[in-house]
Length: 193
Image 1 (cartoon, rainbow, N blue to C red):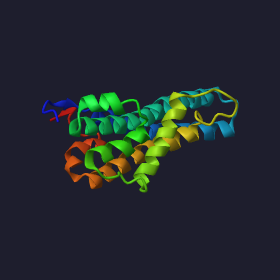
Image 2: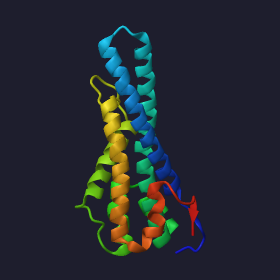
Image 3: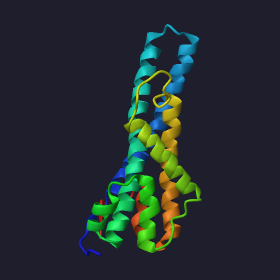
Image 4: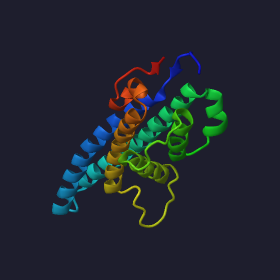
């Protein structure tokens, strides 16, 4: 174990995800108002423009919430392994694994016990990884749901639910990690000892 301070990106990523989720909620209100006005008068170009602007902002904010919630959890689990095993080990053997595999393997390597894969946090992590992959590896085509307003709203909320649940599960799994898991609220410092 290295005694050098490490930069912990999970704190910043978590904060970005949570701010973006709050912005998604604001965009949803604007989007719903524009939709209601368009139903009353489908030719109202001002409302159509409002809808387009709100949807584009929703897309940006939801992508930030989803991608950065996943990045926060991936950065944290990598750091957990690097602090407890070694950065060299993590880089050589774990770095290229997907986020779900890291959450299965790293706690077992470090704590010699399984991370609870039967709990809601892990199930939400799997769903978050899937949503993140749908965005990052988006394939165009007819009827794609990954860019619909409803899908974006649901997945952005799921992202924060996953972040909070995995953090809670990790705190109960390894209580010594509690001080480093305080990133979930978006509070805390960039670096930690």
